[in-house]
Image (cartoon, rainbow, N blue to C red; front, side, top):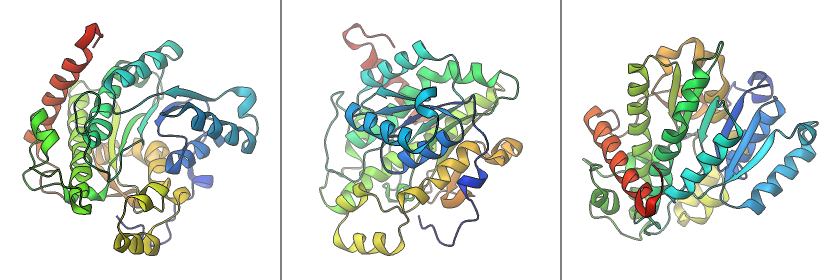
Length: 330
């Protein structure tokens, strides 16, 4: 949770050249997503900014093009529209990306719903779970063939990163993940209190950790060199965190939180560090704490392989039901 100590990591110095590499980053127009995009663009990456608002995404692109020499002419920043809570929107995003690209080096799931009120998505799924988990699942599945094809190229270094949170520890004990009813109920917690919202958010972030572990296992069974990571970027002073926190949490956030720019460090390290490739056995499928520290998750269910499989199987079933509805392709 906390970003204690001045990290030795410096993205200006430590992010290697990314020329020729393709990134897809959700929620790339604001917060830490913007700063991730800025650093990668400055190092030569081609980046697809998958965002909900076209206006805000294009404004972010224009700002970055004004700050970083050459990227406007090279057209390395490209907008794709998506609502991560809508599985049909996520599917359209994948289809549009695949019309434009045959490679994808890093898929970075940065977008997310915060500690907000109880609400169902258009697909009938609690919004935290829909946005933070199932949208991640559907997008990755749609792009997995391209990720695998990229991994088969010489000198490839393919990574899938999902932004989890230390708040995963607030998920209910023995939380069930094996049905839509369980996803929507969160052990009976539909409370609008801060702790109720934290449990819903925490459950979705626990799902991120379980999903990353299961995806890594399945990829490894195929002997494909793709690294999957679930990361905790730390406590960050974002407008969203400030807007959804009670006064006592605001005090803690303002006292211990770091800037959005520094909050991007863990994502950047996990997306680009040579160590992740060189010591892949140590990193694959892991939970990464602030400043790139490998560590055990704080919820006892976070390494439950049976629960991870149940979540995966349920995700397949629910996504298929949604995407085959109204004749849509799965």
